[in-house]
Amino acid sequence: MRLTRAGLEDVLASLAEVLERYGVDLDLEGDEELALVESPSGSLSFELRGFLPDAHQPPRSVLELREVWQPTGSGVLDRREYAYELLDHERGYRGAFHLHDRDWFADRFDVVVHEHCEQPIGTAPCDHVAGHPVRDGFQAAELLMAIWVDPVVLDCVTLPCLDEQR
Image (cartoon, rainbow, N blue to C red):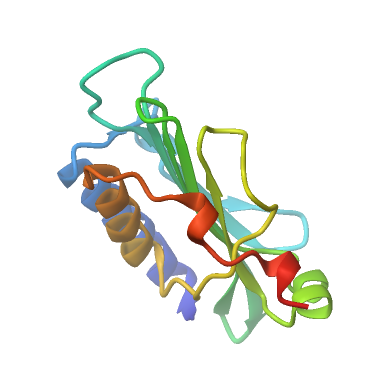
């Protein structure tokens, strides 16, 4: 996925709006928090973190969308990393879609994306679950919200572990 800086700023604002429509209470302290962060190397990143409207509290369930974008030249950015996560405290479940450490994952598992599944939180059948690429933060929000509202909690033991595929 490639965008300009202005395009990425638009995506960030639109993602925040989508999460709020889902009822996510964004963890922001004003509009200045809804901004891209530039690293010394020139990469841009963002993190949207919010609390889900749980029936029982505390702790409240959390949805996080994080991305890192790298300049490729001519004002174009390439998404290099993502971490989309759900911490469902009420049901003791963590689900995540990750793309990071591309070279290590490609060398170790012949893939660059993976998932995490924990139930209870902190207990997983394996460190990394096989997964499919997530198109963008919008698809991630849709997938994670579908997991959160599903009355049946995903059974992590049924998912294929990357460690067993080699």
